[in-house]
Image (cartoon, rainbow, N blue to C red; front, side, top):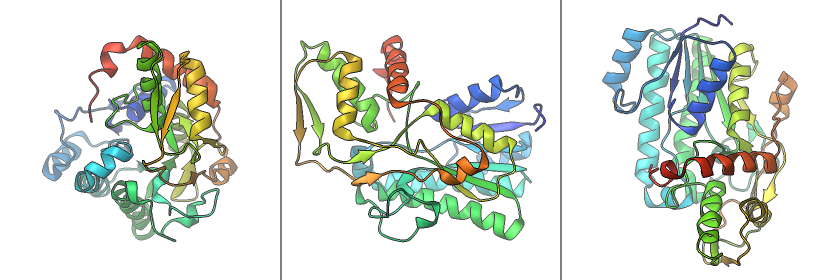
Length: 316
């Protein structure tokens, strides 16, 4: 891959896009383009088409999305469905019309059915009902996956989809209304520690199991995809191992240094009972994750401590 090739990273200011930007720079890529949401509203089809016409990116990485946890998804179903459709449809269509060489679409493991066999294989897509608490976001992402697959089938172009498991890391969202489970726990335990180790209330029973991937590992997978001619249109990206929410809470509790009580609110939903990715397909291509969970959480908490003013103002 020519390191001077023009690469547009949609969502370059977010946790995922920012990590991809850093990893591309560290890999020697120098011709990177990024636009803030104020500079380019990706929901605006006309604005996106004009941007592509003027800039002519050769590679497009879609790390832009409207994201959030169970609470945010439940409160804003139409917003999560429509805005994600608008963002990805505009980017995918403009990339096709402007002859982009490779398009990398980033989705989520929530695209797979709630009760799909574990671990989740790529072929389980569309084989059963989705998890109700995030189906709006999932439906949008499924549409993006199928759009990329359709372009490969109809036009023979390299429009790829990478489906990461639950992500965490530097620049994560720690707002308690819109964050995902791991950063929310870091924030809750940290705040409670500073409040004389007051009790921490967590949702559900703690029995649900989840897989977590450090965002820097995903960025490495994106660079790997960029630099290699992969055979399929859809690949899972994860660690291949999972942990119960209760065990996760205990790991974070120890790292933060919180010694108070955890109260589980069993009236709140657990979400999907288990979500473990089958990552064998990408591993066969030559990539696998490197960061273990404890090390990744320690790095994330260190970032959190160094960005107190940032996390207090983050909103989605």
